Amino acid sequence: MIPIALVLALCLEWAIAPAAIAGLPPSPLAQATPNQPAEIRSDRLGFNGLRLGDNPQRVRARLGRPQRTQNQPPGNYDRYEAWYYPNLILGFGDGALAMITTTRPNWGTAEGVRVGDRSSRILAVYGEPNWRNSDRWGYLTDDGAFLTLRLRGDRIVEILCGWLPD
Image (cartoon, rainbow, N blue to C red; front, side, top):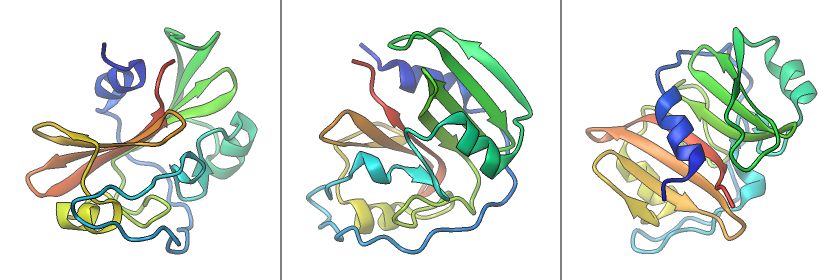
């Protein structure tokens, strides 16, 4: 069965580019070896100060009002709402940030991986993915979150993180 967050991300990946937000310092995450994934923690998943679990008020204070919002099928949540910004889609499940998708090059993960980076950078930071297909590499956390990087050729074109459905 395909995770609902991945299905939503695939349906929503046409969105285009948010206002710049200050970057984060480099991560203390231990560098992975190319054959072994690094331990990715869900509390570090996010971009430029936004983290999974943030509430809508905190997100709005950082980004301002979204260009549009849309209620989505709730899946594992009682309520699920998508917020659209240029090059950024945020998904809120029951009032908490549950999914972030970006195609904006100046938005990096906590470890500094960004859209535009080469696949060798992914391997240097995160190690071998838990899964991969023709254009996506995926990493999983021990507590049910994920990080997915979509590539075109050797370059990252989209980064998505979120919670897997129960």
